[in-house]
Length: 128
Image (cartoon, rainbow, N blue to C red; front, side, top):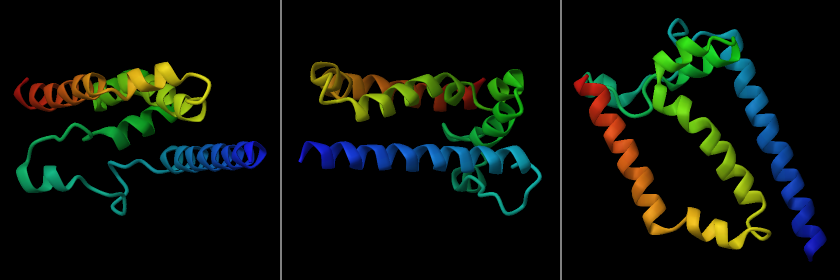
């Protein structure tokens, strides 16, 4: 049973890596600010204000081109959260090895802090 679980995790890790590579290729070859087929933010279309994720596609395009300043300008919060996302993916794969860390990261307090940070970013980026 443990080998099947390990094999499944390997397949999932390969699938995630392939998906990330495919997305990086798309954002490398296509500029979301110029490609009309790229998805647009429904919140921004309806309200004219930025949601927490607005600019993430431009950020990804800038990152795959090595332009950190443009990535920061497009969406500073998402830029800062990339290491957190990588850590959370890593932790998901190794949660059985680090159960205490997994519980702390997925605790109500940690989720509340992340939610507050997202809401603060949403508010501040539209006020400043």
